[in-house]
Image (cartoon, rainbow, N blue to C red):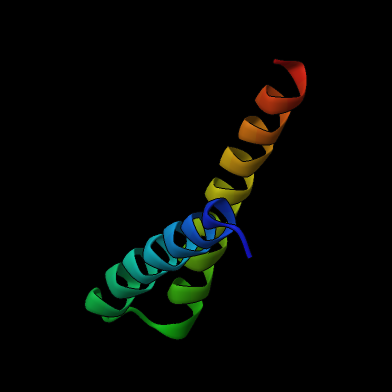
Length: 58
C-alpha cells in the first residue's frame, strides 16, 4: 500500500464517518435513513465519477 492509497482510504473513512454520524444524530425512521443514505451514496458516486473523468481528460 502506497501513501496515496492510505490517504485515499483515510479520506473515505472520514467522509463515511461524517455521513453516518449525521444520519444517526437525526434519529430518523429506518425508511428515511435508507433514503438519505442512498442520496449520500449517489452524491459520493457522482463526485467520484467527476474526479475520475477529470483525471482521464487531463
